[in-house]
Image 1 (cartoon, rainbow, N blue to C red):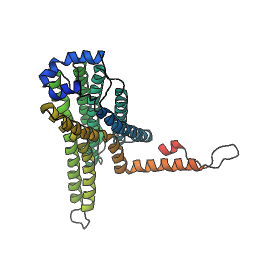
Image 2: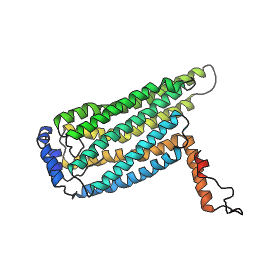
Image 3: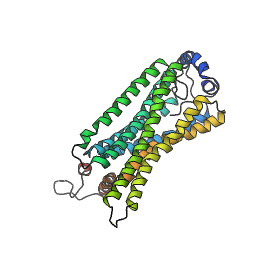
Image 4: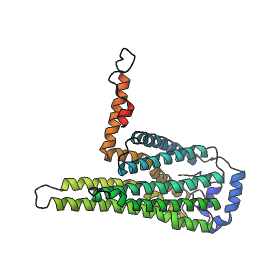
Length: 344
């Protein structure tokens, strides 16, 4: 998510000029970037790329592997929701990897407008996928014992899908009519205001709602266990603690990864920072956001035993093929494990 940082030219505009000055120079900036697109000469940019490219390569591998393993094991809506979350992070890791790689050699304004639009859309989809997972966990805990609960709760997912679709159309319209600065904000005043009121506000709201839903799930589970075990000698504390830990883990991933970048964007929109402070703040916040492509698959494996079992069976299959197996008279494998049987 970090754009090129050539502080000798256009980054000075983003750091030192007011929004009104940036607006008055936006069209001139578009023309200059399109005609003369100098490569990033600041070592700061290469240091950032050297950090993020390996992260997104690893994230693409982890999420892509999980997607391949999970795609044939879809049985419930929870499975579909988990697959959606993995798919969104796979696409996001690929997008960011291509963006950092291409930006080393190519960087006109039209490229950064595409990057800015893709980044906004990607973050919206990540937040929405996490909210879908929180929805599904909450509904499963509350209504899984009722027949047809998936159909009865489908309206919430439809509403979220419509909300995200409206935001995506808004993002495309904004960056089709406005240039972008190095922080991916629209430079035109009207488009910047619309972006802040819709995309920025919605992203924060979805993240907060996800945390609230996770806490609501914990409270419901805690109350249900105390009610069902009322008058018995069974201790509920270990079970409650386990549910609480899971809810905290699911919520903390979003908070750790994205609160720093939200603070960074909010502060830099309103306060002019010293160059060194700006750079350090940017490195930390963007690094935290990039780690989501690694943290998410790790948490999915840690929190879901069926995913752990699937991975373990695949490892056993791989070990068995490495050691070799006996061949029968027709040249066929004897007592071998097929990958299809592992995925089924």
